[in-house]
Structures are given as C-alpha cells and as structure tokens.
Amino acid sequence: MITLLLGGLFAAIYLLLRKTVLKLPRCKSDAKLHGKTAIITGASGGIGKATALELARRGARVVLACRDRQRADAAVHDIIQETGNQQVLFMQLDLASLLSVRTFAENFLRSESRLDLLINNAGVLRDGQTDDGFGLMFGVNHLGHFLLTLLLLERLKASGPSRVVTVASSSYGRGQLDFSLLVDLRDSAEGCGFRQTYRKYCDSKLCNILFTWELSRRLQGSQVTCYCLHPGLIRTELGRYLGFWMKVLVAPVVLLFFMDPESGAQTTLHCALEQGIEPLSGHFFRCCRPRTDMESKARDPAAARKLWELSQNFCGLW
Image 1 (cartoon, rainbow, N blue to C red):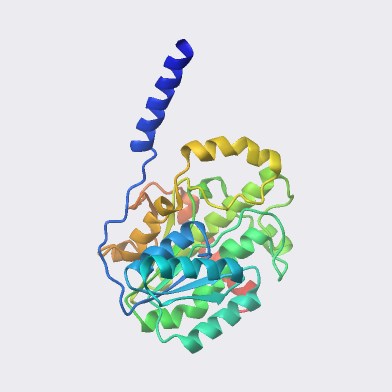
Image 2 (image 1 turned 135 degrees about the vertical axis):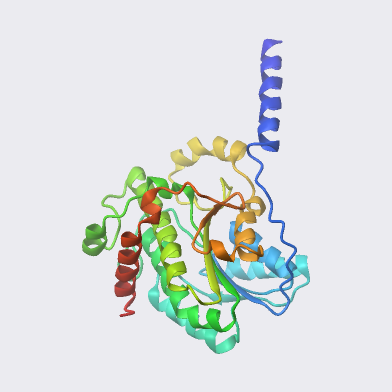
C-alpha cells in the first residue's frame, strides 16, 4: 500500500513538473516565409529536422545541409509529405571538412539567388579529428559553421533583412578557451576521456556564443542580425556516440526529463522569426527570451576578437 502511495505521489509530482518547470515555451510568431530561403545544417533529424519542418510549413524554400545523404533524403521526403511544400531539398555538407564547406557554399551560391535564414544547428558530442586535423567538436561545432557563415555573408546581406541563428548551449558555462592549446593542438583541451570530451563540447559552445557576439559587432549597420541559443534539454541523437554503460546510466534521465525535438526547436524558431528582436543581435536566448545574466567569459571582447582572428587563420581567410 505504501509503495502504491509513493508511486502515485511520484507520478503526480512528475506530471506537475512536465506541465510547469519542464514545459518549454513555444515560438509565437505567425510569420509566413513564402519567397524566403533557409539553410539548416544537421537537419536530417532532431532539432534540425523539427526546425526545417516548421519553416517549410510556413512556405520557405528549405535547404537541408547534411552529411548523410540517405538520412537527409528521408527527412526531405517526410517534410514534403507532411507540409505539401515541394521546395525542400538536400545539399551535401560535411562540417568536418573545410573543403566540403567551401564546396557547399559554391554550389549554393551558384544555384540559389537569395538566403534569408542561415541556421547553424549541427553539432557533435564525440572526440576525434576533422579532415583538416582539428579537434572534431571544435571543427564541426564552431569552425565549420564559422567558415560557412562567412562564405555566405554577402548573399545574406544582399537578401536582407536576414538572420544567422546558431544553436549553442548553456553548457558554455563549463567551457574555457586556451588559445595556446588551440594553436598548438588544434583542439581546446588535451585527452579523450569522458570528462575531457564533455569539456571540449562545452568549449565549442562557448565558441558559438563568442562568434555570435563578434559577428553582431561586425554586422552593425547591415541588415543581417544574428542570435545564439540554448534549445533546452532535448532528446536528440547528440549522445549516440557515448559508451554503452554511459548510455545505460543517462537513459532514465533522458526519458523522464528531456523534451522532444519539436520543443527543442522553439527557441531556434523564435530567433529566426520573431519580429522586433533586431536590437538584440548578438544575444543569447533561452526559452524564447534573451538572457541578461551571461557569464563574463561569454562577453569578453578581446577573446571574441582573438577567436575570430584565429578562426580566420585556420580557415585560410586572411
């Protein structure tokens, strides 16, 4: 009897949490996107696919910029079937290869006349190296998106008002940038255990925020604005490369307390669509609201400039 009562109490508390604390706000914009073009990286599943689905539903021409053709083709099919929007297409992009980023940009600029939304959504939580010898998370989560954004910037300006939205994370708070390590190792930390892997992920999310901050400064006076965000605790495939026992340990937490990808896309959509947030260019959003309590390391102008210059050098953009 006591067990049943405790079980009922737990269920009631859990349902209350799901309806309140764990419930994420939704994008309230009613913007229509007919005649607009959007690129979404990593859109074959998870938050990226949910974002692409909503933009297609609103009438946008949506480019799914993905590494895996088979998964991307399946996502394109699903989105067209659900929305009836035939202007959804796949273009090959592997953010772990700077050559692939350049090839994607060349193909896009040759075939598409405008770009209204660039959504830097893709991310990895896995150790390793990129094709160019950078740490995988630094290379994919930051450097590939840095190069992609700069290569497409003139098209964004020509299509203005336009926006760049980068999916970061509140885990930036556990990150720190050691520029000497980035120069010497082409990675943000040494080692490859779980703790170091997570540290590198947090470092890459700090890079996302500093990049957005510096990009907004450099875009002042243009019709391009940029935003970064924390999507929430979301059930995605980000942790698919975790070890077996780590997956076993985190699975109950993910099942009980993480939200679905549609919920995770809401702050991305808010940053992409909400009117009137242009003065907040460069800001970090969470739960569809700008955060005013950012840690000082995420608003360090010297670090932001140094990261920008180092990224330019790494990408051969001098």
